[in-house]
Length: 284
Image (cartoon, rainbow, N blue to C red; front, side, top):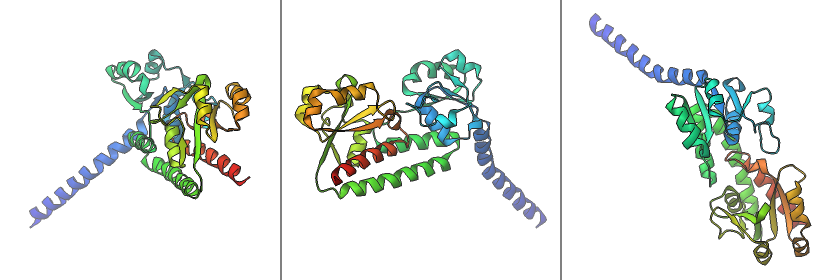
């Protein structure tokens, strides 16, 4: 009987140990990570998900107000320019890179035994959610990611409900310097769809040229202009001053570039800005 009790206690202890080990390993990995980001979008995700003490360095763009949503969090954090030697010298446990860096810097870092996480580009809101959750799992920051996503989804749902009450079709287009626009497979198009806005450049696949004469012929209700600063930069000003567009009666919405430059929760700020200006104009 005593032997049997000892075996039961032994097995119980082993089972408890086996249950705790994965959790302990996960906690240790999460706490020990010395993380470096060498990409703007990675900066934004990283600084929104983890404590600053875990971040060794971020890209030089993290402190740029026109591009970054984490300027405050980036204060005091060393910056890097993404050079291989610079990244290796930091002795990180994990380096976050963008998709365009994967085959070059990412590959060389991995060959040196340094872990790399690639922040993927996104074309849909669901891909944004998936990307955040995947990174959060790697960082041990799942709870923080879920809180951010829940807030984003709550606000997006409110915007969709408001848009569904409109009695007319809103037609809009993103128009950038050089006549570039955003068609299918872009985050701006995903936001248009969510807000029940018809994208007059919807025939484009991804980003493509939209000649001015085609834009005028399409006659959208709204032209969405990316601005480097809140007041609108020189590019936006040139569009506003173009005589053809001034005569057309089309209206403009300025979206700060930082709000939809990356696949993160700042997209809902862009959506609220668009929806708010359109709704206010409809009331007048």
